[in-house]
Length: 190
Ligand code: URA
Image (cartoon, rainbow, N blue to C red):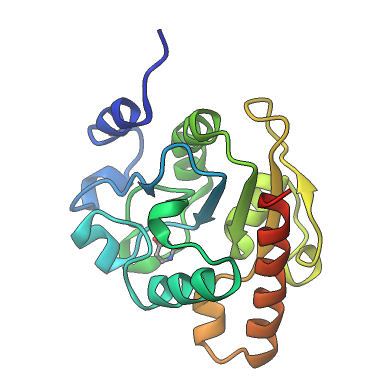
């Protein structure tokens, strides 16, 4: 019998498949509704996420919550939020390719079990990974894509900016992210 998301999360909490395990306070597996229509995927936990064990609970997360409520009409409990890597990279450096490869099966299992209608990839890192491309987020965003994964063939990927990019002062980027989230609302209400 296949495991539930809670059981997979308990397994991941013990993971030591890469060197990020040594520096973490705890594994940040993900949070939200295990049967959500909508899933967000960020890059990896920061300091606050590592402390609380929850994704997107710092400044970026507060902005994500606000944009999600204003443009989609959902709270974080009504969707599912996860990251590409589940453990905090030291000094907020980018995850290394071997760390991403080691962690990827956890993300695949999350997508498979949740089977969301839409995955929103936040920023370059998760967008390039899940769309298997080297194209940057500025060019990628503005369109819907099929998910490049055998585990959830009908899922649509909608790439948008990482909320941290908006916090760095992107007025135009915020408007574009809002329009991406309007497309998310339309895609999940079909
Ligand atoms: N940035 C991310 O990509 N993920 C988090 O969980 C927090 C900040």
